[in-house]
Length: 422
Image 1 (cartoon, rainbow, N blue to C red):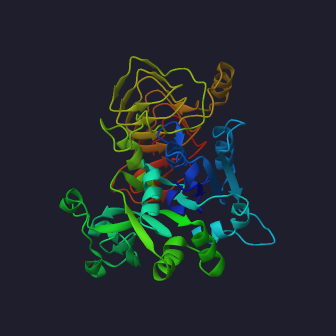
Image 2: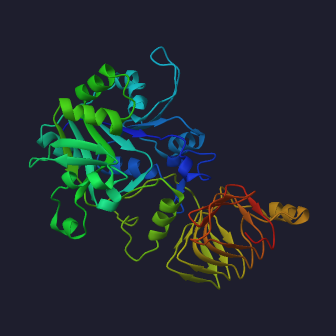
Image 3: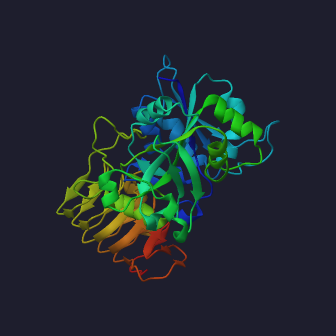
C-alpha cells in the first residue's frame, strides 16, 4: 500500500449554517451531543490506518484549533499527527484561501517536507463512515492519477452536485457541476441494482479525492488561476490524466444547512441510525471528558440520546439529542430538539448569583416547552418558556433567536427570560 497524507479542508464562512457558525467554523460545530463535526473525517482516517493528517483552517478557526490540539495527541514514539495549517501570509502567498484547491496550493511548501505517495483530500463538514483504505486501494488498482469518491443520487438530488459520467472501467469521461434537470439524461449511469431500484442513477462527487503526489503538485503548481477542486481542478484533470470514480453506497451527508444539520442529529435517535455511533470497530474519537454519568429523576425519555454529565428532573423528552452537561428542570417538555449542552456545570454559588440578578441558569428551566429547536452551548432558557418551531414559519432573525426552515435556533450564550414565547 502507498504511504498516505490526509488533508482535511476546514471550509469557509459557513453562512448557511448561521447562527451555529457565528463564532466557530463548520467543522467545529458540536454534533450528536458530545462530538464536533471535524471528529468524523478525522476518525475515518484513523480507523483506516492513516494517522498523518493536516487540517486547513481559515475562518473562525479558534474553536476548531483548540479542539484539535486538545483531542488528537499521539505517543512521542509515533510518527502520527493531526496538525492545523492555518491560512498565513508567506513569500509564496499574500492572500486568504480562495477555494479548496487554493487552500492546498498555499500549503504545498509544508507538504513538500513530508514523504508520501498519495494525498487524500477530505471535507471537514461531512458525515459518513468509510474504510478509506478501500478508496486508496481502488486508486492503486485502477492505475489512476486522481480518484474521486462518488455516491449514487437521484435525479432530484443530482442538480445540487457535481455529476460524473464513467466508462465500463470506472474512468471518469465527463463531469458537470450542478447540471440542470433537463441535461441529466446523458449523465445517467448503471449503478448497483438496489440503487437503481431507488432511482439513484447519477454519480455525485462526495468532495473526497485521492491524488498521486506528482499529480497534486503538478496540477496545483501549473494552474495557479484554478482555485476549486470540484469546479476547476477535477474537470482539468479528467481532460489530461486518468481520473477514476470510486463508488460508495453507504451513509454520507453534507452538513450545509440548519435543516440538514437538524435532520442528521435527530436521525441518531432512530433505533438503527445510518451513522452508527456504536460501531466498536470504527469509533468516532473526540475530546476526552472526565464527566459523571447522566442523572435522570422521574423523567419520561423516548427515542432520545442523553450524553454524560446531564441532570434531568421530572421532564419529558421525545426524539431529542441532549448534549453534555445539560440541565433540564421539573416539568419541562422537549420534542424533536437538539440541545448542545454546556462547557461546565454551574456551581451552587453561581446559581445563587443568577437568582439574585434574575438570570436563568444555563440549561432548560422548569415548565418550559420546546419543539423543533436547536439550543447552542451555554444558552439559558428560563422557566415556563415556550419555543416552538413550525415548517410554515418564515426565516427570521430575532434578538436571541433565529428561524431557519421552520427550525428555531437559540444561539450560543443566549438568554431567554422566564415566561417568554418565541
